[in-house]
Image (cartoon, rainbow, N blue to C red; front, side):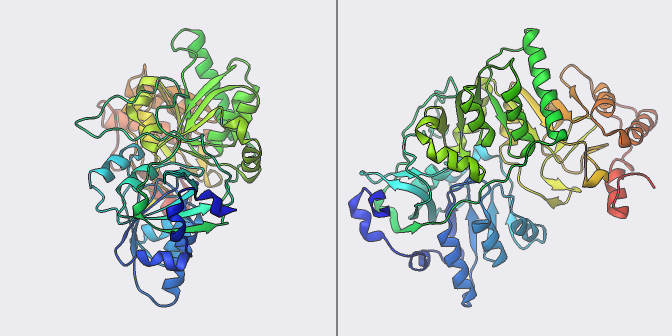
Length: 497
């Protein structure tokens, strides 16, 4: 019975339904929700939409850990109920409303969020709405498939609404909850290996703040991962071959932990370890763990996998739940300020792999905006890892839109990561290690090795004219730097006409 999940008996009288619980959320309420690609509340958003459908006019400020499913971002955006949204999001409806300036959005490095909430930078934490699998005998929370910023949200919230998930088994023991001291009293975070546990298996909570408890049978939206295509596999092969080459030549140690972003390319990179005999066992220190991590654990190739959330396909999710006893020995889920901590990432020497929308010939990266103006998603934790990793890869297919867009351009239309944060640029055509190269050498190598053959002549022509006409350290023709983008917006194709 779900009631057995509430082991702190004084909270039994807080059990109610979503319509009664959501009265604690009114116009202008700052709502802090659990969720980091998974583990987000589902019932309260639906109840808020029902209120709006009955004619009530109100809007909320919505703060999460990162992206959520359509059951949160989608339904609330569609109903016009969100005034502010922070931080990362990836929902189509929310994205359209943000780009139409109907919802205000502030992008943030995920590692910084919790401390900003604690110091009041995001305003008062009026209500925290969190998903959990259980409440302990002392009144603390056991999260579901993500941790994110939830420990800080629960600590700072004036009121707490809890959704107990029946679709998630009791995950007690997989979480490692640690909130560091804030400056000027912050001490080093004592993680020395990916699998180190330094906190508690639950989120500490003041039971007196709990205003409502709901029982939920709603599932997370499961990720859909396709089999790695030729492009993804080739990118993965380039990365693994390069790292193997560096290790064999004693230019890096063989036991550095790996991080990869979310998506098919990232999943393909991790899947590449399955057939690679050089990498016998690896550590993973990442923010989101995907299907391939379970496959690697099954093959005995993972010593430990640390993250802040698990984003699994339906098939992998079922496998994970059925064999939870085995996976719990290898997997640790932490708050995002720990999983993405720049200090820990740098000290462990993480190998970071993150995706881009486009890169330019000098190594600057746009990972969030299409054609410079339209938000696709937030920066997420990519900056936390790219800037602080021992070796940072930025990966992208060389083209998009059936070849009508080149992912390698003269100048990126929006900068998320500058050349100083990026070590290696990878497409399916090749890889460029920018570390020993001056900017002009980077440009020539990126055009030759990473750009799609259909665009190499255009890029080379631009670069050569920039060298002759402008000169300088990083030659550009300012009047033409965004010529690829302008062509696409005028004709629907970056190729010259």
